[in-house]
Length: 143
Length: 439
Image 1 (cartoon, rainbow over the protein chains, first blue to last red):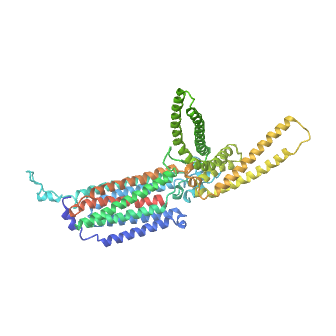
Image 2 (image 1 turned 180 degrees about the vertical axis):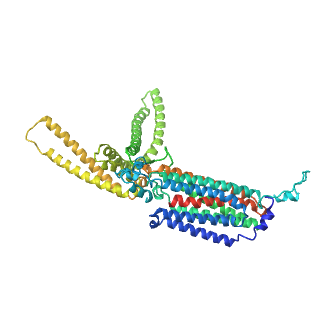
C-alpha cells in the first residue's frame, strides 16, 4: 500500500464516471432480459431455451462487471493467469455435470427404469415409469 | 514494493539487493486476485452441488419458485441493489484516487447501506420460508415428500393437538371460575362470622386469617384467568375451524386411505388433504379429478344408505326382539355414516371456497405440508444464499472498518481491493439469481 503514486497516475486515464454509468445501465438492461425470460411462459415451456438465455445473459453481466468494475480490461497480462484456469475448472465442472445428471434418464432401458427413483408425478398417476419412460421424461423437462 | 529499490527502508545495514518486482501491481491486489480465483472454484463447487441435487431429484418433483413462496421480484430488487452498490464502490475508488476523500466516504456509506438493504431483504425472505415451515430438515421443517399415510397421520396429530390444547385451556378457565365461585361463597360465610358480634374471638381471628388467604388466592386466580379470558374468543374461533378439519378432513382421510378398496380413491383421499393444506399448482388438475371421483363415490354411498334407512324404518309384520335390536343398530350405523358424509361435504365445500390453502388462510394451523423434494430444495437454497450472505456480511464488516478512515489517495489501493471483493459478491449473485429464482 506504499506505492500509491504509481497506481494513481497509471489509472487516471481510464474509468470515467460516464463509463461506469453506461455499464450500470447495461447491467440493468440485461437483468430485465433475464427477468422477462424467466417469467415468460412461452419461453419457459421449453425450459432449456430459457435456461440457456438466462445463463448467457448472466455470463455477459459477469463479463461487464469483471472488465469494467474490476478493471480487468486495463490490467496487464497477469490477469489471464489468475482468472482463466479457475474459470476453466469451474465452467468445465458445470458443463460436465449438467448433461450427466440432467440427461441421465434419456437412455434408460425399461429394465433400468425399474430401479430408478420413482417420479412423484407417476406415484399417484397409477402407471409405472417402466411402462412409460417417455412420459416420465416429459415431466422432467416440462414442470 | 517498488520502493525497496530506492533504499528508503534500508537504514539498518542490510545489503541492498537489486530485484525485479514481480508484477506492476501492489501485493494486496495480487493476493486478493488469488483469493478470488479460489472463490470462483468455491462457488463453482456449490453450483455443481446444486446441479447434482436439482437434476438428480426424481423427475418433475423440484419445486418451482412459486411452490416455495419465492418471490421473483424480491430477487430482482436484490440484484438491482447489488448492481447499484457495485457502481457506488467503484465511484468511491475513483473519488479516492482523485483525492476527494469526503466524496469517497459518502459513496462508501451508500455502498454500506445498500449492502444492509440486501441483507434485510434476504432476512425477510428467510423469515417467509421459516413462517411456512420450509426448513432443510426436521424438527422445524413441516415438509413431507409425499402424501402418504404417514403424512395424513401427521396432519391428524397436529389438528388433534390444536383441539386438545384449546379444550385444556377452556377446562382450566372453567376450573378457575368455579374455584372463584366456591371461594366467594366461603367469603360470605366467613364475613358472617366476623360481623356477628356474638362470635368467639378465636373464631373471628381464624376467619380473618382465612379471609386474607382467600383474598390472596383470588388475586392469583384473577391474574391467571385474565390471559385465558382474553384468549377465549380466539380459542372458540380456532376450535370452530380446527374441529371440522380434524373430523372431516384428517380423520376421514385416514379412514378412507386405510379402508378404501379402490386404489385411486385411496391415494386421492390423501392427495386431496395435502392440496387443501398447501395447494401446489401442478397438482391442481389431478386433485380436481380425485375430488370428482370422491364426490361420485359419496353420492353412490349416500343413495345406498338412504335406501337402507328407508327399508329399516318401514315397519315389519313379525315382531322379533333380536331382529329388532339388530335393525336399530344398523339404522344407527347408517345414520351416523350419513352424518359423517354430510360433515365431509360441508367441510370440503367450506375449504374449497377459500382463496388459498389452509396454512395460508390460518397461519396458526401450521399443518404439515407436502412438497416433493422440498427439503432438498431448502437445503440447496439456504446453502447457496447462505454462503453468499456470509460474503455480504464480511464485505459489510470491511466497509465498517474502512469508513472511519480518511479515504484519500493513500487509501485508494485499499478501496480498490475492497471493491474487487465486493464486485465478486455481486458476480456470484448474478448467477444465483436466475438459478434460484427463475429456473
